[in-house]
Length: 136
Image: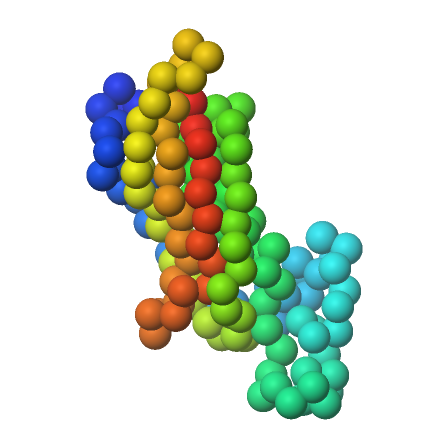
């Protein structure tokens, strides 16, 4: 967790670098999330749809952004959190979750930061964007 007194517009959250997404990760996430869509775990189904391989669940990347936030502030400090899916994360992709404070406001007696969030692959592809409001 961070000392929030020093947070200002432009503060960057410590990036969360994720190991390459493995087939095991996809299978475990399918089981834990209940999302058994075969596009994420069955190579034959992915190929029948014209893809080269399976790809990660979008919600897995959203979970990584959630971890980025809770590594920075306590979970109970998160006031809003939303994302937009921009591209797929291929198996063996190496995502990095980042965040940057874009505004700070006083709301309901709290000092709140709006954080711009992004998940980017090693090749520069942005797979997920979003924002969160956290109480400082």
